[in-house]
Length: 289
Image (tube, rainbow, N blue to C red; front, side, top):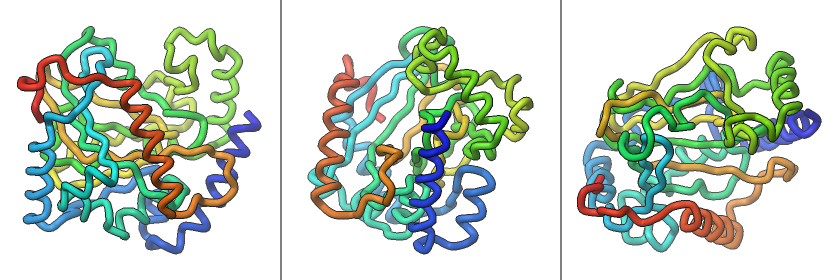
């Protein structure tokens, strides 16, 4: 419980340092809901080039399976970005970077990926991402720029508005979960990514579920210490996006600076983690985005 309070206090301080980079309107929206939604992020011609780059990069993807969902991704390190001008221009947008850095409470480069979430493979009804959960005990950032319209049958992202705030009720709930700890039946929860049933939300004064059925070229940036999940999706459906993440040690008192040595070190760790936790698709020809 103490680590939760300390981590969130430090995160709040780091966000305050970075807050001058974004508008007061964005700050208010994020503090209220826990996410930001930006529409029509790129001009149509640049967005089309980005879509083409994502489509043509499919032979290099890696994948992992959770329940009935196959997730395919390609990490866009600096060497890869140098071959993808539209993706590189997106990642170098100072406006978007400032928004993601504010939510993540750090100034280093967000980690971009081409991402495709496919409702296929594995066991039905056994996808842990389709249950409301918090990624970890401290604030973290994930973002998606959707490359296609996300309709109800494609498993839209859902977020519980305001669940990123550490209220007394949420803190009490976290403490109760910590008592059972490793004895929790769900293995992700036992490792710290706590799950919550939809019926429990009212006890935490959380009652608004936002489902992001959004048009292409929409960016969602979320603090994933708030409760979120992947919606149910139609069989063999998929959705593609440029996915960003940032998750660092929550006890570093100041935002890490945007300098090449730190960025390169962090990106090597991300690439190593992806290689360890994913594999090449068994049948690449049939799994192209």
